[in-house]
Image (tube, rainbow, N blue to C red; front, side):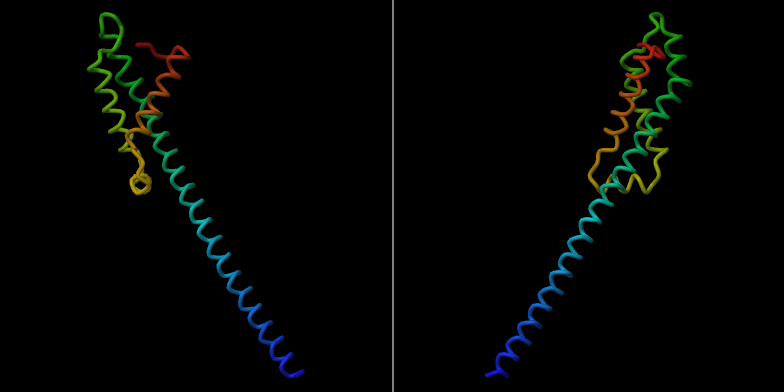
Length: 137
């Protein structure tokens, strides 16, 4: 009888150890997946930040090289709707040219509308510039 009890205890311990090892493996896999998701989100955020920075830089460039001249040439000192539309297109194309291929690939793979990020950051920068009196129109 003692042999049977010892055998049952031994088998029970082996089953318990196997379950613990399996749970550790599952927990490790789950943790690895979670870390991967966080890193992917961080990568997308970095690429988004690059797009916003490119847009801000481009707005400042366009202000310096184009906008001031267009406003000076206008009778009322303001941009026309056509000029604004062209500047928006220039903003997007010039900003896209500044982005690294890696960031473009990351944002595209994540399903992010890069043009919308650039346009939004550009609009925010123009609004900020208007708020500080650095531009009008």
